[in-house]
Length: 396
Image 1 (spheres, rainbow, N blue to C red):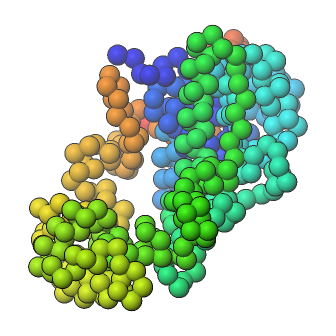
Image 2: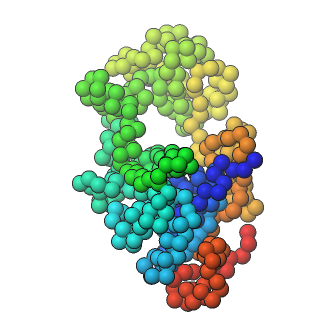
Image 3: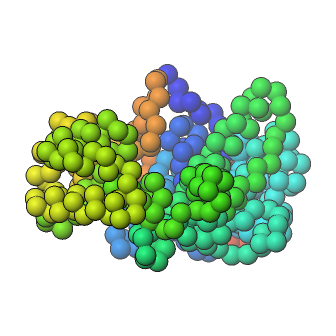
């Protein structure tokens, strides 16, 4: 059975994290994703904190299965070659600040003029219009504006940053992929191409639903660390174990809390599930004292057969070895021994395979341009003029 997006061509002008993750979803589903990079730095993620070598593990993970075309869009020949490629494409994804794509003459107006069916997605921090549209930003800034960062952290402490970029990924990548697929369905059904405007700050705000509930219901959000799902009640929070590790206690429903109290032989705590204030502090203190009496592994063993939503807090190294993730084939090893995480979806008739490794900058320039009909003489002339880069790359 063919891949779901077989035959779909995506031109990816994005860099770093949100755009490459969005197009990774499409590549993992079978699309031909062509990473369009300039002859200079290209995607900055290639050299961003390259602790594991260049390109680094993050770049490799985000760009597997893609091809790389290295072309100078500012040169007339490069621009013409790109528009010729647009004619063969179904999707364009760009992540420039508003106005940059237009300055390069590769915006939706330019692309739809040569391909009216094109689905064109712009991913930016604050969107294509509005008072902050031209402002620079990163995940931390979008979360700050959207009221997410203010709610994140322990009671009495400062806002805390997680190491999963919520606005970039939940805000930039996932909504972009969803909107692109929806637009493709429309085009395949005979509709026109579309322009998609994704703002990471918008998406962070759109997902801040639990705090919105508190605001609408009570007139104010809860203090940091004091809402139902941020540590404000004993049945839902993080508790330290005797070896300095942690347990995630998610016994939110009465049946789970009852099962936990039974397993701990503490029926006196049953009525304290949602206790707040001094009463809640007392129940939490009791749990803290109990969990501090044994190491994490022992608690995991003791509670393994109890249906109470209590689980270990693992570091990533342990998560990659977790039997459940292993059974679901979420972690794969490439031929060079490096690990990669599989896509987070399973679909009948389509199996994820490691496939093509992340490309070297311009690795597929020659192949892509030959598909457009460029002959060797033209390629040689363009390469000599710096219009394209066509490096020779050893096979994997």
